Image 1 (cartoon, one colour):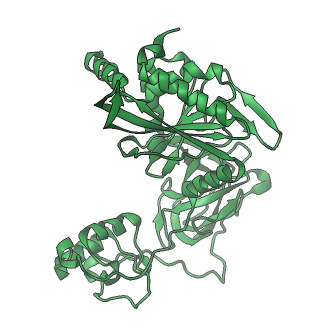
Image 2 (cartoon, rainbow, N blue to C red):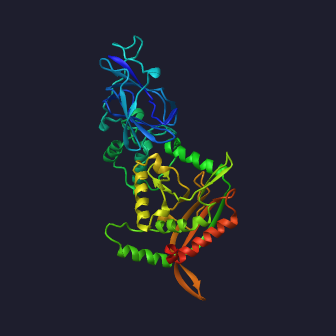
Image 3 (cartoon, helix red, strand yellow):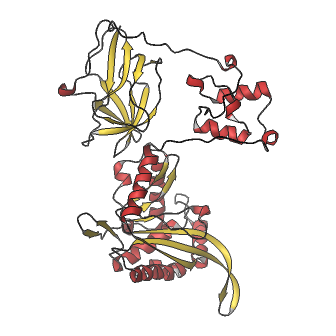
Length: 431
C-alpha cells in the first residue's frame, strides 16, 4: 500500500488558481481510475477533474467556494502498489475532453512509498447504509438538515418538513431514497396534510462557482457604470403579422422565428448611425472602442445561472441565419458546452425574459459594453389610433446605456428610430 497526492494541475492559459465548485467524492470512497473527483472553475471555464489512479480517498483539501493554487494538494489516496509520479489527469472543460499534464519537474507530485507512514491513520472505508436501516427521529431545534437543492425542492412540493426526515448519508444527509422511505413508512407527503403546518428555520446558501462570478460581474457593472434607463412603447402588430406569415410559409429546414431576429436586424441597421452605442469602454485606460462588426450577446438563463453567448457578425446574417445561430449558442450555454470563444467578444447585448417579459425592466449593462436592450412581453392592449380605440399588440422596449459614453439625447433618438423601424417592419429590409 502507498499514498498518492493528486494536486491541482495547470489547466493552461496562465491560470494560477481555481475555485473549488463541487466535490463528487467523500473520504472513505473507493475510486476507480477516470472517475470524476471535483469540479473547479477558472476565469475561463469550469473544469471537471477525474482521478488518474484507483484507490481509497484518505483526505480532501478545500471546501466548495475556496480557491486552490495550481500545484496545491486536492485529494490524497491510499493506493495498491506503486504509481507513476507523473500520471496524466483527464479533465473536461465546458464539455470537451482534454489531456492535462499533472505536474512538471519543478512541481512533481509526492511519490507513493511501498508502505504508508507509520503515523498515518488507517483510511476509513465506505460503508453502505440502506435507507431502511435509518433510525427514525427528529433533529433538535435549529439543527439544519443536510440535503441537495433537488431534494429540498421535492420535499417542498410534497409538503414534507426535512427536519423530520432521517438521513442515511454522511452526517445525516437526506437523499431521494430517504424521502421515499419516509413517505412509505410514515404516511406523510401530501400537500394537503401539511398545508397549514408552521414552518421554522432558514437555509444558508454559499455563493460559489458560476453564481459567484455572476454576482461579481453584476456588482462590477453597477459600481463602475452610471446606468441611464430608457423605456419606449412599441406597436408590434404589423411585425407580429409578418412573423406569423413567415413562420407559416417557411421551409421545413428553416427555424421558427421569434422576436429576437427582428430586433437583431433593427440593431445592425441602426448601429452604423450610432457608433457610440456599439462600443466598449475601458474606463481604466480612458478609451472607448467603437466597432464596425456587430457581435450581439444573447443573455441566456441556464441551470447554472445567467450566461451571455455571442452571435458574431450579426450584420452578415438574415433572419433565418440569425435565428439558427441564436438557437445554437443558447443550446451550448444551457448544456454547459459553450467555449470561451462562444461567451466573449460581444459589443452589445439583448436580454429577454420571453413570456415572463413583464411591463418594464432596468437591464444591467454587460460590462465593458455601453448598451443593452430588453424586450418585454407583447400584450394586446387598447390604444387610440386616428381618434378610435383599437386593440393592438404592444410591447415595451427597455434599455440601459452607459451615461459616460452615450448621452441621454442620443440614447432616446436611437430607441425612437428602432421604434419606427419595428412598427414599419418593411424598413428592416430596405436600404
